[in-house]
Length: 201
Image (cartoon, rainbow, N blue to C red; front, side, top):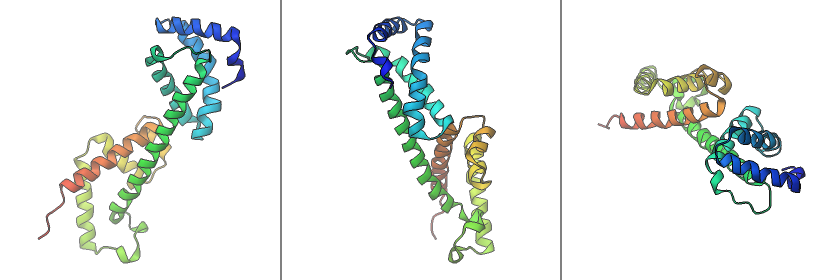
């Protein structure tokens, strides 16, 4: 965070703003946001996430969490900004982990759906026409059992291979939210796929 937040005059003002914010005063909350949002976004979140939209989403989440936990902050002679930066860094890390999990799930799901996308099949893994139709029908049947939002996320991203931003727009959500929806949709699909696995004869 910027060195200006170590100025004694600001620290005195900050303590008063925190006291008023804890009491629910909107003006004090707004003043704290105005003071810290820029440095948090530019110095903490954007460098970690690399995407403006993701950084903005995590910024909002950081302040939401901070307001919920404001009573836990202890004045130890340093700016509230360092506490906010720690929350923001943790939230950015959470997003990275969610993306990593989503990426692993998507790679697995892409293999599962390979019969629907012949262009990505390995030559030796190609199915005969009859088997391909059977798998395609089963995939569509499993998709049909999913909630509409999950079905749309999977169809847009995996079957139609649209960009993440376009998928998010179609679902009227932000890209990080779409990533979470898609991860949950993949998990739901795999659960349904496993539950409908035909017993071997």
